[in-house]
Each structure stands twice: as structure tokens, then as C-alpha cells.
Length: 288
Image (tube, rainbow, N blue to C red):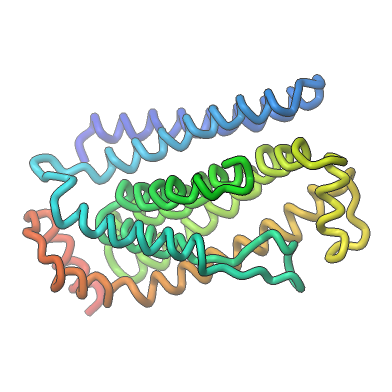
């Protein structure tokens, strides 16, 4: 990779990290100073979106191949198929586990098509699938679009790191490593988003504020209150819930990727560049 690209990636990564750190610090300081919750959420969302944009830019620079048309007919067709599958899974294939987690948390596997797209075509394609899925869901939002924004951020945090690492280590061990790191990134981001965006937002729109939010989980956590809500919800719900959800998505992706990749190559043949051919040769050699 040329030095200019490495420098650009480093600068954007540092910038994204600083934005996220600044977001957390801002939320903590603003809350202690009595700043309006609505204003805190608005500013935090803008800062998080900026960090996400930096992440997408990093993935684009890392996987950019000169003299290769990105939005070819074949790629657009694959993006359309994966986006449609992701949307259908997001809307209709989900279920709660009320005996383990709060009833409003649904297990769903809509990140699987985005992961598959990221593995086949690169992290930008994976991020595009996540974004299209969310955009199609917005007209049916029941959370003021804030829940969907949270899903967008968490989906990108899962898909983009996994796709970047897989395209660097293009073999079975690389796939396992990439999915594991993507899962860790998603869980960390899920905890941050729930702590500083989602729960404060729901506390604002529900009558009774934090006490009302805590009341929704009372049947599961008998001793939960507005004061200790985050202690219960983040570590007993958000963390294990996303660990289970992401592990399920990772396992499905790992076992389906190769078969689907070969199927797409037959159905939608694509003229491959020398770089792509070298990658495939390396992949076959690693797996043999």
C-alpha cells in the first residue's frame, strides 16, 4: 500500500477515535452541567455520524484499487440482492428472548447479508448494504428514527472492520479473526450507543423518564431502578444480547460465505482484475 494511503488511513483512524472519545467526554460533562437532554443527543448524534463517515472513508481508501470500476453491473446486482435480503431479514425475521433479555430486544440476523457483501466485494459494499437496509426501514420507524440510527452505527461497526481484516488475511483463519474483531467492535459500540444515545432518548420521550424505562425491565431485573438502570441494562442485557446476536451472524457468515461466493460467481460472472485473481489464488492455497 502506498505511503500516502497509509498516512491517510492513519489520520482518519486517529480522527475517528478522537471524535468518539470527545463524544463520550461531551456527554458526561454536559450531563453534569445540566444541559438539555435533547441538545446532548443532537450533538452526540452529529459527532457519531462524523466518526462513522471517517470509518467508511478508511475502508474505501484501504480497499481502493486503481483502474477498477467500482460500481460495475455485476457489483450493483450483488448489492441489490444483498440489500433486499438484509431488509427482509431486518423487517420480518426477528424474535425476542424475554426469559433472558428485555422484550424490546429482538434477535435478528440482518447483518449476515452485509457481512457476506463485505467479504465478497469489500467493506464499502458491506456498509452500503447496511445503509440501504436502514434507509428502507426508516418510513416504518417506531422509534423516531433513533433506533434505526443506532442499528446503522452498530451494523457498520460490525461489518466494516470484519471486511477490512478479511481482505487483508484472505483465508479461513483470517475469516475467523475478522469476524471475532468485528463482533468485539460491534459490542463496544452497542454499549456506547445505548449509554449515550438510545436510553437517554427513550427517557425523554416516555412519561416518567428513566423510571419508565426501568419499569419496562422490572419483570426481568427485580431490583432495577432509575439510578442503577445502566448497571443492569448495559452489562446484563446489551453486552450478552449483542454477543449472542453477533456470534449467530458470524457463524452463519462463516459457513455460508464460500458456497454463496461460488454460486454468485456462476450466476453473475465478473471479469476479475489481476489483483483479484491473485487474491483468489492465495485464498485457495491457504485453504488447501
